[in-house]
Length: 128
Image (cartoon, rainbow, N blue to C red; front, side):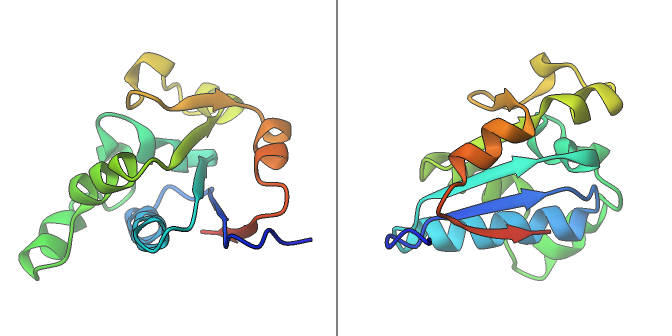
């Protein structure tokens, strides 16, 4: 059963810049209209929640995005954090990507898939 508050859970499993950027576009948009959001980064997508997100494939595309007047990754991530999204990363994916938890943004929760699924219960899940 879906929650009636429009809550979203975004599962970012891919390490491509375009997917990560769009995940944050969707998250920021949903939060801006009052929809609660969880972003769970898994696979190579964990780089999107690292302090230095340039581990994403095609991260250099961000310069072109910003040059066209579109919010870049830094702006979107800041907005999502300011609007109180819940940010989670997959513990196994951190290990697979050799990314230490200390390299993550402040406030990112390291969790397994059962924790994400429990937190996402009743939410619309979007996979990118």
